[in-house]
Length: 366
Ligand SMILES: Nc1nc2c(ncn2[C@@H]2O[C@H](COP(=O)(O)OP(=O)(O)OP(=O)(O)O)[C@@H](O)[C@H]2O)c(=O)[nH]1
Ligand SMILES: [Mg+2]
Image (cartoon, rainbow, N blue to C red; front, top):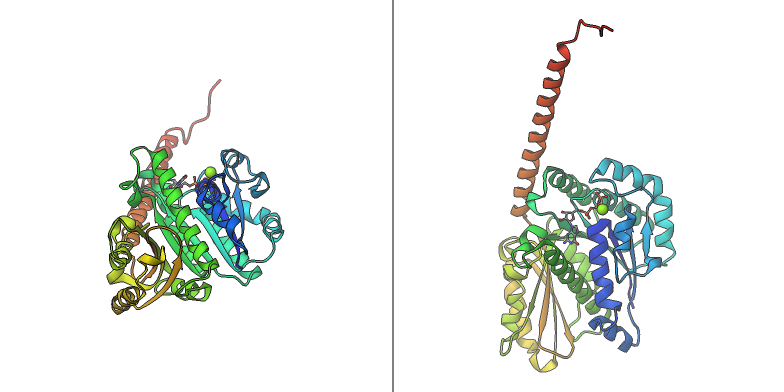
């Protein structure tokens, strides 16, 4: 049985964690049923961490004891420098709170890269967790809508660079901008849909890692997959429709519409893990093996796990990548935004200096 810790940082991380709690433990949640039937239920511990108490209050499915407020008034206002300082001032308390939950075999850290609190806490926290626990740490990093403003873009650029530098076990990207086109019209329903999708995939992965599989893939394989390429990856998913073969279901999980971050996984995929779940009658193991072998020719190493469960086949595919053109684009835009801000600030400062120059040799007269 695996001991798993899931940390949700900042508002975005908190909300995705809340979606995980809803799916896993909430009344009627599909995963809750799974757990209660299991002889050895997975031990999943969760904590939502935030500087803004209101964000924590907003959560509906996370127990009060699993909400941790780091005292700093109302968030850090997207300022990562303040965020880092607040983390350093409070890290003992945060680590104690985590330590109460025992030891872990696998840790997820979920955050937006764009805000202030989560994006500044995440790299520092990953560093601390690495020192304390001998467990793989997977970061789930949510990228902003590109039109959310220059501060969010620069936060993302620096947060991701710091996350990569922590040498966590790997980073799985969730791209709000990319996923919006597959979500509802308004931002709230887009968030809800993205959060639920992300939550379900994480739970799907955990469920598989915890279960007896017909074809086995495990935590060791996951570590190997996550350390592939540049250690940054994406997740795909596909549910078979009536009559689809297991091959088309597996390939379906590689399609752009199922990925959480856009990538050409055939071209840029470094390593992959496929988890196939469904009723035994759909699971033609020879075809599974053949399909995976074909994929291995394009994506270096593909691990596969097969899980027998009622229902039509569902496939979760997890990739690390050798190249991330979409990130390159984001960094170009972020750099432009930073330069634009710098120039604007410089110009305003000059203008103000010019204005002050008018009274340089003068004193007020009363
Ligand atoms: N997918 C998704 N993205 C969200 C959600 N809430 C906020 N975001 C995104 O997260 C980014 C803002 O980060 P937050 O998590 O709100 O910031 P924070 O970590 O709380 O930091 P501060 O509020 O600045 O202290 C923006 O890019 C939002 O689009 C959510 O529920 N789901
Ligand atoms: Mg916030």
